[in-house]
Length: 337
Image (cartoon, rainbow, N blue to C red; front, side, top):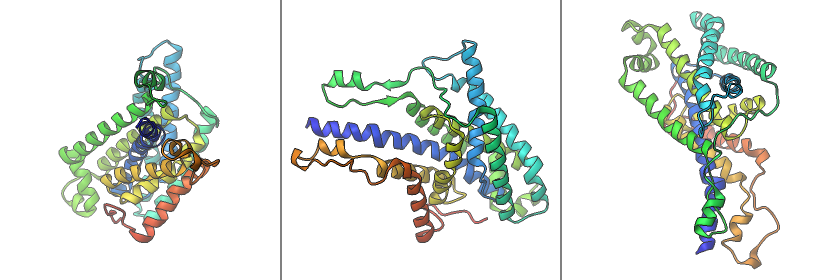
């Protein structure tokens, strides 16, 4: 029986808990993508680098707080700096809209024109972030690293494996729940949220009803910037911050949004967990897990790993292709632009 418990603990430590945490990060990121697509009607390819910018701003403020001796231990100081990162990202998104997207919106350009413009914004942001903070890994997490430590768990239970639950993972899941509840409450209960939904459903009818389109755009970018910053900081705390990694995150984030149904907030959340758990499950090495469950004679020399972690984004791509071939509208159905 102990072997079964040990195997389950291993699976929890390396597949289930990391998958749920990563899925929460992707879900928050995908919500930003789906909001822009659903309301502003274009695919924002600059979203990954917007996340990087928000995280960079948060890291710079975090470093300043740490140098001044300001902290909120046992929690990471980055949580204290996050509001400043969000404000910087909101300013960035509003300025980008004013300098880039507003021109095409007034010309009523096709969605593909906005998409191409967002690719340009993506490369500019990528360069700006690398210039300011550098291209290398940056670790900014402080405070207590674990909520549950493996050594303490093993000592308490006598098992060979111990449950390890990182603070960043707990914060990620808790923050994701709060963000999702707050976002759905805003969209369904507030006047501004209902205006956004009306604008998304029928722009012409919304304008005839007296809804101010510029106000809708402003609120949309504000929420998108906040979601991008939160997702980016949570990912950075859980792993580390590297600008190119956030550029790569664009694939699983878009895959999450499309798998769930592009333009559908519920779909973005579901898609995030589908992509994350698939990536983690396929790239985990099951050698030690199986050693607890099968006879010693059946032990293998290999890692029992379907794919190397180097190819984890290939999992996102494969799922994306399959969904586009079998159910192009996604799990919950996409919003048509």
